Each structure stands twice: as C-alpha cells, then as structure tokens.
Image 1 (cartoon, rainbow, N blue to C red):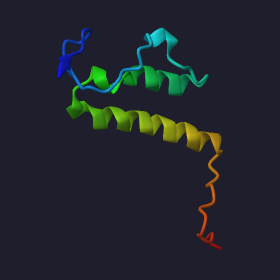
Image 2 (cartoon, helix red, strand yellow; image 1 turned 90 degrees about the vertical axis):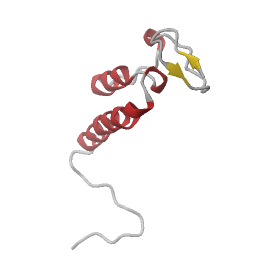
Image 3 (cartoon, helix red, strand yellow; image 1 turned 90 degrees about the horizontal axis):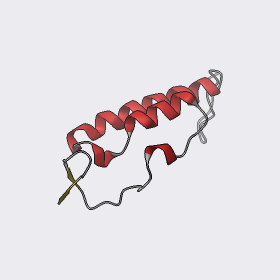
Length: 83
C-alpha cells in the first residue's frame, strides 16, 4: 500500500479522481456542493471514518430531495396508498 502524498496516510490501490478540488463537478445546489466539498475523497480519510462521512453526505442529499418534493411522498410501486 502506498502513502497519500498530501495526507501522508496509507492509500488503497483505487484510482483517485485526479482532479483538483476546484475542478470537481458542481451541482448548483449550495447544500449539496458544500456537503460534497466537506466529504472530499475516501482516499483522504482512514477507513474507520468512511461510514460516518458517507452518512453525513447521505443525510444532506436525503434532506434536499425531501425538500424538493414539498413533503409529498413518491408512490412506491406495488404498494397501495393508505386510505
């Protein structure tokens, strides 16, 4: 296993994005962009932190999605709605 030259931490053999943070894709949603910027890359953090970091981004994405629906629940195929 090699070391990440920026953090000095061991890094896996997985390929990195190779893009500077300034060139990462932007969604146009400030909440999502901020969450993704804070998340960074899994290679920048030890494996013990991966779950928590992914969970934080998931919370932001779920919140933005819920707000975009205006509180309306999307129908689930195969389930009948409650009367």
